[in-house]
Length: 113
Picture 1 (cartoon, one colour):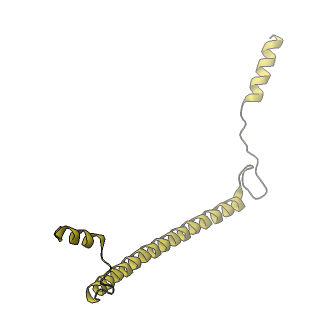
Picture 2 (cartoon, helix red, strand yellow):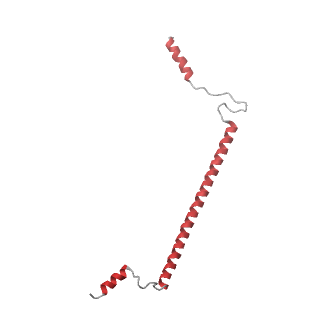
């Protein structure tokens, strides 16, 4: 064998992956997060789910408050319009000398010249 073949075989032998067969003192394979890693991941997942539920609840409450405020504002506007139209019909003209532009224009057209 030549020295180049020997070098190629050495490099190929080092490049082959090895399977980890050694175990930790608690019985898990090395590289495994173990029971502690599972516990931390599980707690993190539960916290994320709880935060998502809380966010959904808060967004729903905000939407309901907004819809209620819009409905209340529309109701108050309708009451104000009703009161204004009732007051406009019921009250006599306070200053009979002050007229609309439209009334002035109509009077001007009706007068003989």
